[in-house]
Image (cartoon, rainbow, N blue to C red; front, top):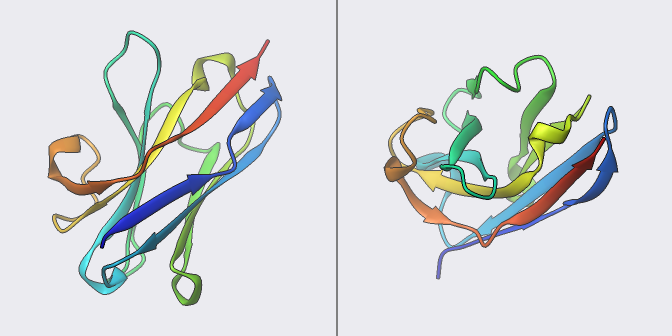
Length: 124
């Protein structure tokens, strides 16, 4: 059974940091890219970042470049999203997802498997 489980969300003040974790099971990381998406109330799901197991290449959304960093620990089947300099507009539910289609974060439909999400709230 494929599972992706996010953790690490919470309430943080503007300018603060959080690290999200995505533990996955039921598939080989070698065959997939793992991405992070977020969805704020009333807004469409937005691609945040993605990492490829093949060559470690990464991709970031324009709104998080320079502030967020994605990484992976293959031995732990875990992908992390380090979020620094958080802003109130980063408030959303963050989801991790697995894709066989590379590190394109513009199309959530490319992602086959999704976690349940973890909520991040940034206060001003």
